[in-house]
Length: 480
Ligand SMILES: Cc1cc2nc3c(=O)[nH]c(=O)nc-3n(C[C@H](O)[C@H](O)[C@H](O)COP(=O)(O)O)c2cc1C
Image (tube, rainbow, N blue to C red; front, side):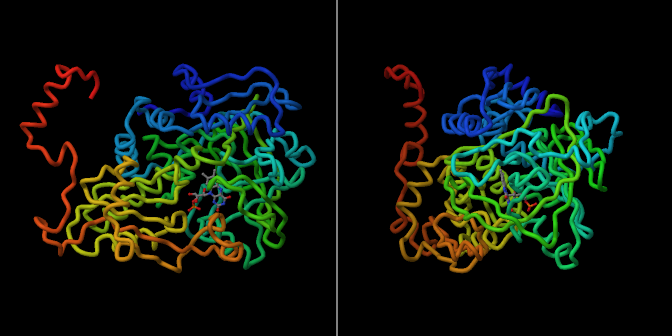
């Protein structure tokens, strides 16, 4: 199984596919780089590789690394034009295989150890943290990265938790209490007043990045191994017992402080808004920086759809929900989370086999570990193509009874980033949810009461359909 061991191999493949633009003229880290990435996301343009960053000779930026389905298909070893359902099949196939434990390699073999800064030499301003958006509360070094931590009972966690440079040795950022690292930090370190070792990985290879932002049910090191089909190569940190991907571009090691919080934010967020206020957040104290020669810093620019966070979080949340519903024996036909909804709408296809199935789906979805990240579930039957927005919207507007078809769940776990919540509701991560049940009731008479869908495929006998399709070009039509 072919996979890209690092971003350098991946960048070369993107360039060969015509999906990379090398920018050789000077680019300013202060908003210009961010603006380029934003425009690229909004136009679905090729990923930019910025090779000449103002004030930072020898450094480059790699923007929008995985912001399209074509790029996702590529990193899974598929043809770039593979349709989304087929990409989903491949993801499910790989992540349903046996977990693959990581392999530890010697430091001398690990490119991320080519340069090591310790003690007085540690200075985050030596790295080209971009000012991603106008109005951000600071320079965000970590937007497409992950934080490694270790839970004494559960094991290793990789998670993308954004980090802003606070001063030369300090970063700050939000860690939600329902996230895996949040549970370790707030449940096991802070109550004991203990600093928690962390390592931030900037410029991870594409499959490790996907593993880190997926709601993985197993340690992400093994999840990455499943996606790769072989062990991910790790190397030990310089100042703690954590292990990091050996081929990453930059590693920042240190401790999360248990007894102090510092200001972070505002920031342009994945919902497409600047929502969170400047507030006191988690503090990362840096002890060591290691990096490859000529390091390439990855930049994701969150905003209106579609960036890689929205695309990959939608993709993996949908497929992890699919696994969960199948494991419970629910007769589903598929799950798709719409990336343009900034991972807020889960579309679930089912066989309309028994009354209450939509309620069963919604309860499981909202009640699962995935639940805080979305607030709308749309349940449709198997006559609707869940990947086709037009068909889904048609089902919502024609089959969902405005009173009986909509169930509001007033209480739930949400995130503090929902733009539609009041500031007070956000503060407490309140998560009201809603189900749109687009299934015709089973107690209706199927001949006289249930409306019949009127489409080419559903209202003509097979012979007529075949005749029309067979004659399509003869009639004078070119494409069908
Ligand atoms: C670009 C990006 C930035 C994110 N930033 C944060 C963050 O600052 N805080 C947070 O708790 N989750 C954040 N998330 C979501 C977590 O990465 C996500 O929940 C991930 O799966 C970690 O899951 P876990 O905490 O369940 O292991 C972000 C996701 C992406 C894609």
